[in-house]
Length: 348
Ligand code: NAP
Ligand code: ZN
Image: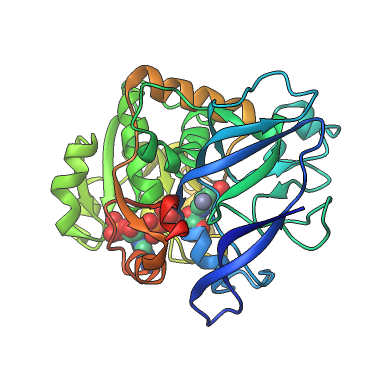
């Protein structure tokens, strides 16, 4: 076991602060990774503040990890020392259930192991995430990172990227479709980039008129201000698909009204109660769905697509010492569009 520098929150109303954690010695199938960068997801904040009621303290967040390999176990086949790699929201799953066999480890029927706040099978207790110097991960859950991209800006692809890519692919978004992305934050800005790269007519649906110009720069063909009822009316019944990244429970009815007959809106953000009127779905045979991150195979496909199409996140770099201030800014929807922590700052 190794002592490693990290940052943790010790309770739901505490700031994050320096904290020592242990990592296991590498096993035959493990890869040891020195962490270079870690993105800051809104889920990190939900977990630190116990918004979902299931946090375990101390919480060491971080599931948008980029680093390089410093050691591999004797049975590791796909990675060698020096490789540029990523780790996302999962570090293990049973590998035996139907979901795992279908490359959908995020829906593992025996429970996937989340990168942080998951059950740690090796050391007991719970897992610790990427706000740390180093991590040891089972090979199967390590991703290859294309070398041609700006490495810092790749980090958010490991969660914000795959969480938006997976539903766009699952609901077969294609050229000619009219696709809405609700919420221009970490997830939403990747949703716009991907929908646009897949050839869809992409509409950014935002509460923030000040983000309109950015939305267009990111690839949106149109911007719809959701608080403007006249504008919302004009778009009624016209969308083939809507990806909703709003991070809290909310009234989904105005967005469902935007869908065409038989079209789907998929929630990825509101992991709590939402308001939905049955009539809005029934009149038009519409669908409300949900989606959780993406499987490892699909995450690798997304990273490879980003390598080929030169897609990365728009990021603001921070030192770990500024993490608490960064959280407050994310909650105020004031980040363009993902904070990424430079992990070298942990050594300061
Ligand atoms: P974020 O950066 O805070 O972005 C969320 C955006 O939603 C905001 O920038 C804002 O955009 C909009 N918004 C905020 N509050 C709103 C409200 N009350 N009503 C309408 N719009 C609102 O968050 P994120 O990192 O993208 O994460 C979004 C959510 O997805 C979080 O809840 C996170 O936990 C969850 N998540 C889910 C998965 C999954 O697998 N399903 C994976 C990762 C994250 P505008 O200013 O444009 O309105
Ligand atoms: Zn996340």
